[in-house]
Image (cartoon, rainbow, N blue to C red; front, side, top):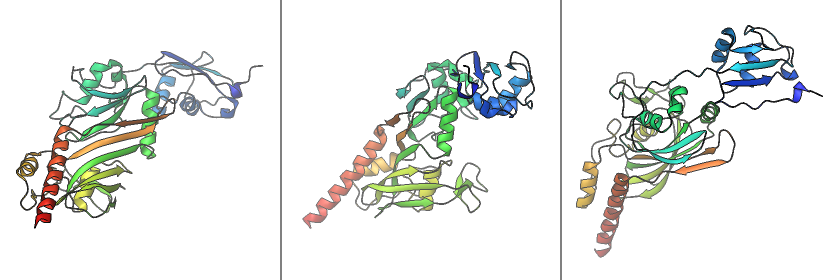
Length: 336
């Protein structure tokens, strides 16, 4: 016996036609509400447009978004995926740490902008991703669900399907994605801590963010990974994901990130520093910040995804110079 209450139709986000039967549990609800429940890959506004244009039919006939259904109706959706991203594909090498039909996890190098924009019309991560998978043009923001600053290196996840994109956005909002960074900061910290300070746009400098009472809730946890004479290697974990969050919070804690052009401090050299350390600190012209680990439940089929991006060579050299300088200083001190 046919039981619409227990019937669920599989939905393939790449198909041109999708079907579903309205369960009795949704009887009495509006068509646009039911459609949003049965076709969760698409926004309610997009589904409403498709209802109005006749691309989503009820028992083979057109209907209105506000029409109520009684349960058991057959819905047919003719999916029309418009181009959402108009950037051009470009053959730019990218380091892919993981991929399947629903997502990419990539290791973004420092210096690569994520999105095309003013001053960066091309040569971005989006251009590179579109070359690798042209169908990303059908997704909002080409599947980008979170960003890294231009000069921050490390791991990022990119959706390749609407179900993955919607779920990843939801997971990020719910703080269900583990995001762990490495940062070299000014000052020899004695312990870790938590920066819990709201962040928003700077009132006068629109390129900068700042801590302000009326800002958006922002929390960064940090702990010591390695301590040097006048600097510290920190492991930072994002609880929220505001623009420039770690950079702003470390400046607010009076331990700005080494090399940060927006939030950094004057160059600080330890007394009698080695020549190598002096050269490394003077030559490090970007924020010493690296997205090291990204871990989350797969947004479509479940199962843990954990990807780690190796520390880039410039940060490795900086850390090595800080370590050597500290060891040499301690050796000199022991010989006294």
